[in-house]
Image (cartoon, rainbow, N blue to C red):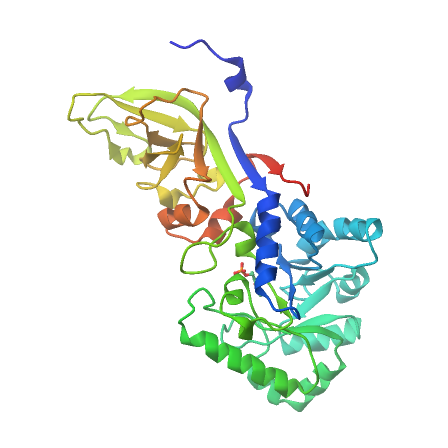
Length: 382
Ligand SMILES: *Cc1c(COP(=O)(O)O)cnc(C)c1O
């Protein structure tokens, strides 16, 4: 029996480390893929994919990023004071905040007064913005095949729409790729062609933006004047081959109990896992970790998945509970102790690997990250 240890009892139960140097390196790498004429934005919607919009925005700004995309006006208001401060502190070099979901959630007048730039996603948005905010800047979104948001290319057949667009103070005309992460998908080239055609149709020189993270890797044809990477900044793999990005988030959870469980007994809700007989009549040892679906460790990982202790794989057993998961640690050369940390995301397990075990994508893993973690930001840009 080990002595009760003050330190491990008082220490945080789980830690989410966010490496802002890796984030900065990822942005610089993406920017380096673009031609000299193209700018690189940072997509910081959904609290910067769960990693913290304010520290992420600050770190990207420090690298020279001046274009920030959010989905909601509320998200814009979270980073607006920071960007105002940075502007007065550093230069007159003003950063722009673009709101992807359009002029909603706040009046157009207030949005324009705050200096926020909406993405106009429909004919209705265009008329509304012109009437209420007149020549305040906006971005025009043309749908080229995603069929989610944006003007249909057929809307550009209407003279009243073209006349209204000609009155807009447009910073960019944008579209969004549906299959950028599948380079061989025929829709990429079709969307590219439709986007170019729409730009010609608008009949005046306009700055264009098409590529998300994956789109940057489709080649120079897709880069235009502004790229809008999100996921790749945060270490999610934007390409079907080896991940060129650096991991940004590392998550670890503390072992709160270790127990030997006899063969034939079950572990967790629903008794879905039965402790097997061991060949050498050894005893099976399990570690309970302080992490569950309330922390964004998705319940769909139940019955598969693993955590890593000292780089060694420890399979998870039974169902994911709200506040805990259980890992089989029987095979570890050095048995872990209560209070040790297990790696959930990090050098041994990427966001994409955990996402595969959860039957989802890295985006959902990051944006689900919970609020109970002790968050530690590291890097020179904090
Ligand atoms: C979320 C989003 C992005 C960023 O996409 P990633 O795949 O995360 O790089 C870019 N543009 C639009 C319109 C988006 O909604």
